[in-house]
Length: 312
Image 1 (cartoon, rainbow, N blue to C red):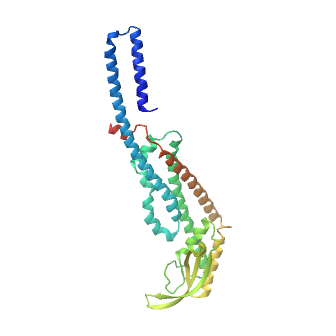
Image 2 (cartoon, one colour):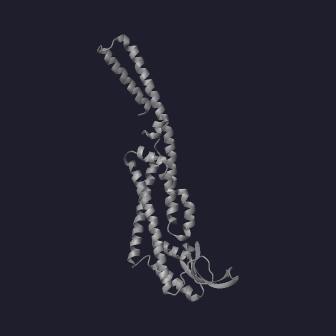
Image 3 (cartoon, one colour):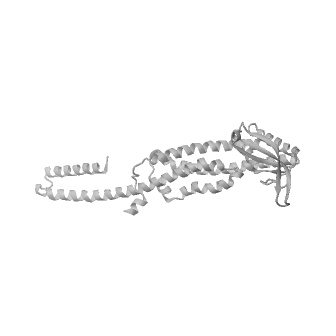
């Protein structure tokens, strides 16, 4: 029922009451024009007031729809672009650069967030506030657990390197000594939280490296890992000789097997917790996304709030 329809019904009821009052002699017939004029004046004032309120509600609803659109952008960007970058060392710079574009805090700190969730949600949509809070909290815990997992994997790697008598140096650059590339640990980390790429291949190749510090050349044996049917290939370690290079390969492959059948109770508990949190994030993301899509279909948010009261 539109606002105009309501006013017409109210006017008809008012005039009907007036006629009943006249019929029972409570007021004289000659006073009808005066009372009718009074009713019309009252309704004119009321209608003008309601029209003004509706204009304000429409303008405020436009602002809320813009905010909902931004919320949807941040929500989807964080889920699809930020979460996949969490945990891995080689993605830290990209995460640092990309994250501000999809900051959850930008939603939580927006004054329209409080207004929308506290003043303009009805029925099942009231769950949006609690679901979003749970999502933000779970995402923070998820990232912490991923960072803990990578640190744990790094300790496992360092322990194996020490047992094998290999250098525990982690670096991107070869300087004549055995070196592990951070991607060695990151790939293990990735394989522990997802399925191992069946097309993955490891090979050792001899490469001559320039050493700027000594202005000389050094021979090294690069351990190269190829994934995704050759779409990505990179060094995970560089050794001084083939024997050490093969040791790197053996350590990587042995630790990788732990991802599918680990006997390490602490590691197993970490992987289980991460898996549960990941499922929870996915469920909450879907619920929040659906609610935002539904809310964006609202033509006008009718409830009065501080913004509307101040505008009047």
